[in-house]
Length: 409
Image (cartoon, rainbow, N blue to C red; front, top):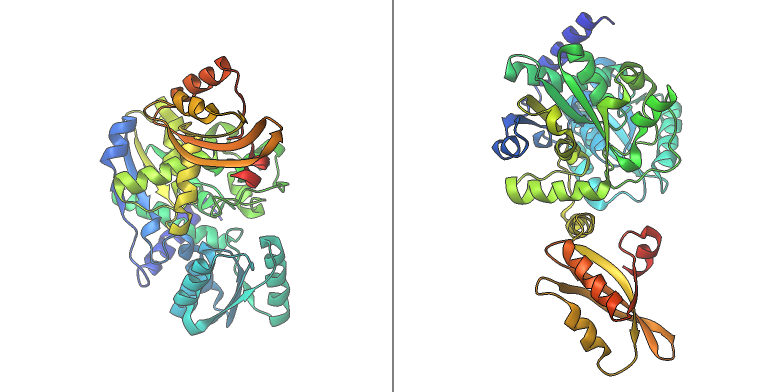
């Protein structure tokens, strides 16, 4: 399909969507614009009917296929988009989800689809779930709805770009958008072409585009961190990579999952915007762009807002640890009167004990203590550790020891 034909098809898909749901707002953000000395706009896909952009691709693929039965595998946003569209088109859908899928996502998928969808919980991991869905689809002669690696899905996701252009009157100077399997990024890139500059953002634990660009072909990551589950994909799509293979590593960014937590909290507390981890990727990336965006019109696509508030304590914990204002360490505390008092005397006025737990006696005269300290300034830990060293206390900082932290924190 030529660039002209793709644009025409994307515009037709966007027009067809208006009979089902309104366009999502593109809003200028004063706070971010001032902070980064740029004209920052947010394309609020988190405000779609299913709180993500995924229903666009599902809608376009389903309106073209016109099948009596649709099948998909998803642990989140794609499932909800498919369910919503099954109800809209009045067709049957069978949605496979891993057994480990949070109940909140299962319930929302059921709510959107109603009697039109059947949810089957299969396997502990997504790959198991995907294989089961594809096997069932072949047996039932249904139409499999890929979450990203499908030309009609890519075309549907390009509606995001169509709406950006319609609001601004032209392409922005710079677009920042997350990459998972590549459906959205392939659609936006195919629509705008070279009319704008791009930054493609991935979570560090799921950087499948970066790996594919380095290898020159899609590769399967040996391990995926599912914290940013909306963008944590082990292998980018074949069709999507065919459209993205020329973007260049210089136009990609990988974001640490823990740093992402800082942005989630900032957007919630400062802007009142609820973003899921993948939905916050584009906003978080602004920290790394600096001079590249100064004085320019920049659109960040906030791709989803399906955030389970039961995860909020975890998000806060990870944000504090990443920013350096909270640490955990194991202290070898002498078993003598006054030893604990000596330690407490080392704490400053901004240091707060958030965790204190005797683990065991490590020797006759010493005991191991797990201690969590939260403070206002990371530099306060330099002072605390200097005092511990000066007075002969033995300790081990385990804040960044992922393996050890899983067992004791």
